[in-house]
Image 1 (tube, rainbow, N blue to C red):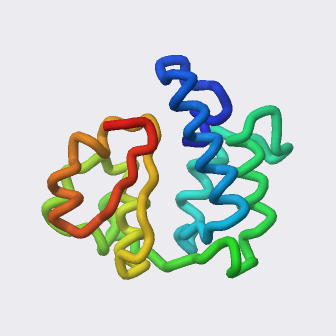
Image 2: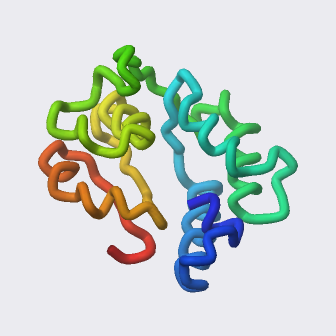
Length: 146
């Protein structure tokens, strides 16, 4: 989503980019973002965003998260447990085949007792695994259709 909001996902429509920007603006002003306490999610965002908070809205949101990491009114952290095999102990058996790079997001939702949701913009893996995710009570909100 941060990449789309930064305008760096040419395969996504301008409508999708606008939806990503609107969501990030809403999340910055009104939401509590749930991250893993070990920093795996933040490290992934760091690969695609700038600590300068610009030039895109994805960069701006990334800087917001960085600055608010210790503010429980904006960021909540939960602990996830690496399993030593590139995944996490929280991942149910039926989701082990799901894209391993996305396991940290699923594990974080599970560690948050499934109170949080995953918001997806451009990654088709989430749509392809929708049935298995639903069976495991993992809610994925697709802001660009799906």
